[in-house]
Image (cartoon, rainbow, N blue to C red; front, side, top):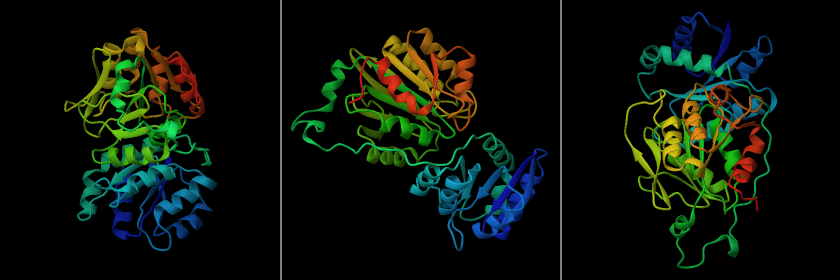
Length: 356
C-alpha cells in the first residue's frame, strides 16, 4: 500500500483528491494538510511514501517547502497546481527543486478536473512512489564562458562548424530527467559535438527548459526548430508534443521537427530520435538513456548499437526512476551502465574528445 499525503490550502481540492486517490486499492491517503507547517507536524506521526503538493499556499509556498524537504528528508513529490501552465517558469522551478512529476490543474472547475482525471492522477502518484531520491546537494557548475577564446570571432558563423561535424550525441530522458540532463550538459565543453535531446515534457515548457539550461551551461542550448543544424557546442531540446528526428545532408546533420502519432506512448519519443540516429548517423552517433519511467528509447538504443553507435545508460543507483535505462540494458542496447556524474566524460571519450 502506498501512503499518500495531500497538501493544499483548498479544502475542496483536498477532498476531491482524497476521494479519487482512495478509490485505488494500491493507494492510502494517510493525511491532508492546508499548509506545509501542518503537514510537518503530521509527518512526525506518520511519514508518507508520496506527497501531492500545491504551490500557492499560506505561510510557505510549495516550492520552498519542496526545496527544504529534498535537502532534509527526501520524499517523492507530485506537484498539483494551476501555476505551472502556459510555459510558466514555475514548472521548471518545481522540477529543479526536486518534484518527481507535475499535474496542471485548471484555474476553474478544479473539482471536476480531478474526478475526470482520476486514473491519470493515481497512475502519476504510483509512478512517483518508485522514485529513488537522495538529499539535494550543490553541484559545482563551471562558469558560462564569455572570454575571447570562447566567443566566435566577429563575422564568423556557427553553421560553418557543421561542415566538419562527424560525431553527434543523442540523449533521452523522462522522470527525473530535467536535473539529469542539466548535470550532463553542465559538464560539456564548448568544443563538444552537437547534441540532440528528447525529454518527456508538455508542449510550451521545453522552451523555458532550454532557456534555463542555456543560462547555466558553457555550451548553447535551445529548443529545436525544424531544419536546425546540429552544431558543435550546441544542444537542441525536442519541443513538447512534437517528434524530433536526426537527418543528414552530406556532412551536415540537422533536425526534423514534425507531428505524428504517439510512439512508445510519448510525443516526443526517444525511440523516434534514436531510430533516426541509427539510420542517418550510425557509428557516428553516441547516445545515453537517462532516468525515466517506462521503456521509451530502449528499442531505439538497441537499433543504435546494432548500427555501430556507442551507447550507455544511467545506472540504478543514480536514477530517480530506473525504468528506461533498465529496459535498454535488459534488451542489450547499452555498452555501459554509468553513474550520472560519469556520463558526460564517457560520452566525450566515445567521441574522442577530452574535457577542456
